[in-house]
Length: 188
Image (cartoon, rainbow, N blue to C red; front, side, top):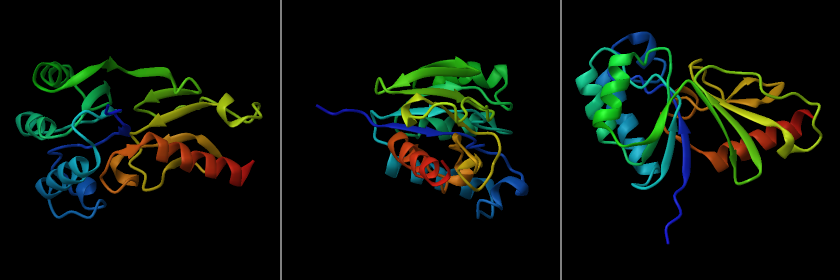
């Protein structure tokens, strides 16, 4: 029996035809960026895997953005970002595979062990009062377009899952936790 893997991502910005977005990612056009994201995504995410998409899905050409989303593997949970308008939200729910969503933030327990807070914006959810790694609340976020995974290197509990810090590819939640734990061990 296949157990779906869980992935996190944000800020695909499909069809966002602005150089300030696609050039820092290493592309010469929005179309090249779109195609690379789709290719990387489908090499990484299986058909039945779960992807938490933390906002800013598309911009400018909604028809093409929907087409891009329809080409992606996985089942989606959607967290809204600042560019996800009501019109885009309605179309995403009507025309794409989603499991649930439509929240601005969501929290849940992963593996009956870790408390997770998903949001588009970075959010301080934990500090160093707790002694054990699993006692912290972990914020996975997008929005910042930063090229590094940690919003603040001194606080490993705010982890950026956006395309900009993960080579335009969704990140596996287990890999994210390994990265967080390594950073926590380094600074505690």
